[in-house]
Amino acid sequence: MFCYQCEGAAQGIGCSKVGVCGKQPDVSDLQDLLIYALKGMAFWADQARAKGNKDAEIDRFMIKALFTTVTNVDFSDSSVADVIKEAVVLKAKAKALAGDISVPVPAAAQVFELPTDQAALMALSQLHGIKDPGVDEDIQSLRSTILFGIKGYAAYADHALILERENDEIYAFTHKALAAMLDDSLQLMDYVGMAMECGRINLVTMELLNKAHTDTYGHPVPTPVQLGTKAGKAILVSGHDLRFLEELLKQTEGKGINIYTHGEMLPAHGYPELKKFSHLVGNWGGAWQDQHKEFQNFPGAIVFNTNCIQKPADNYKDRLFTWDRVQFPDVRHIDGWDFSEVIDCALAADGFPDAPGQEILTGFGHNAVLGVADKVIDAVKAGQIKHFFLVGGCDGAKSGRNYYTEFAEKAPKDTVILTLACGKYRFNKMEFGDIGGIPRLLDVGQCNDAYSAVQIALALADAFECGVNDLPLSLVLSWYEQKAVAILLTLLHLGIKNIKIGPTLPAFITPNVLNFLVENFNIGPITTAEEDLKQILG
Ligand code: SF4
Ligand code: SF3
Image (tube, rainbow, N blue to C red):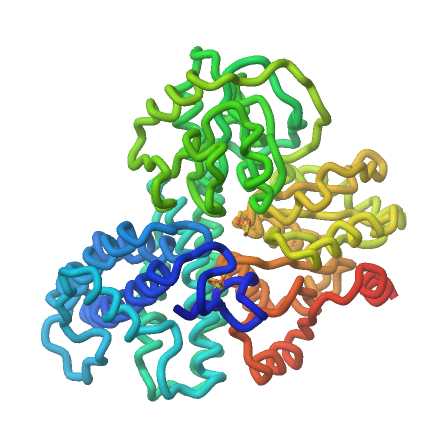
């Protein structure tokens, strides 16, 4: 195995024995083979598109298959092997759709049979690692960046698809970009352009998902969320999928079961059509990397509808479920919309006593923030708000992530912090107070709600008649998995400069590619909270 797609990459280089995330070598190799098969499939799908032919099964499958390979989604070798089988079948379908072509067919796009025995399948998977042999390291770096960006937006496109929203532009770019990874005639700048386009497509995807969410569940409104517990049986929902939560809320209504959000599900409390369920009672626990020590204390059923799952401990494994793309060996898996197994498990468990706790606020999407734009603008003009920070992104286990806690803590009292994604758990239980009624900490939502943060920034720039880079706004981002890569590419596509990123730089970025990013975007690694605040605030 060799995997370097996330911030956990061993020694800042890559995981080569076993994943720091717990991914086993077999699963990693099979994911590589899946990506290889998808590139071949994309080649044919792209050729077919050039002739005006496309196929919904191919388009949708590709998105789901890519999502399968995102960090902390699928740890099951048999499940990944099943996806590969489907990919080989659909590759043949894409080839038929393309018909006769006049360009050379790359190896990945050639017809290949999958061996039926496991050992031969593993041997085949080891032939097709994530790095392309003989390719210039900077080109490889960009190919990897684009691939990981595509994986990131594939997750968002899948959530949108679950809400029956799609956009053909997303499919077309996915095919074109994956096919481009098989084309050795392309040069460095071709891939730079494609990386920026990947950022644009992620913006299109996040917009699609935002619309799917807000059309279905209404625009988020500022909402206090209880961190304590309520007497009754309990189900904890982790992940990002709102439709899943809605269905579970419907199926548990009147059953004496309370639903708690975990991790990235926290912003769900702000949506009118979700918060109307009185048994959606609160948010429980910290960010994903704390699940191992926390879940043993949850006296109910626990479901992951997307990343980030970790290897479960025995003291909660029998109460754990995965759904859809998420899989873990020996953990009960649910496909589809019948949650009775989860409900039965919750009913059989002890449940919680009444123990009210702290309340935190969520629901500051662009609609809510721009609803008070006049107040915000006046506060800036009056000098009450001196600066805005967007402190957000993924959380993770590394100790260097304390930086984000310190940064938020040390940000001066006349500054406002917008936050999103699971990185907020580093500081979202701290007291920040308000500035003239505007809370100093505004939870914009999930990672995909970076779309909302962009809308807020654009509206502020509009109001102050300047560019986003001229606003008193600084972005201090934390990254872990591939959705963060997609979002970073979106910010670069929008021309946003001076982004600080941490806790470490991606292992797949070469010094030359980093130089390019520094020269063109003045992107830089975080240092210390004090130093960075001093530098930003001058
Ligand atoms: Fe390592 Fe991250 Fe890959 Fe897991 S996903 S194997 S932690 S680089
Ligand atoms: Fe978090 Fe896994 Fe990235 Fe959606 S839940 S931000 S890490």
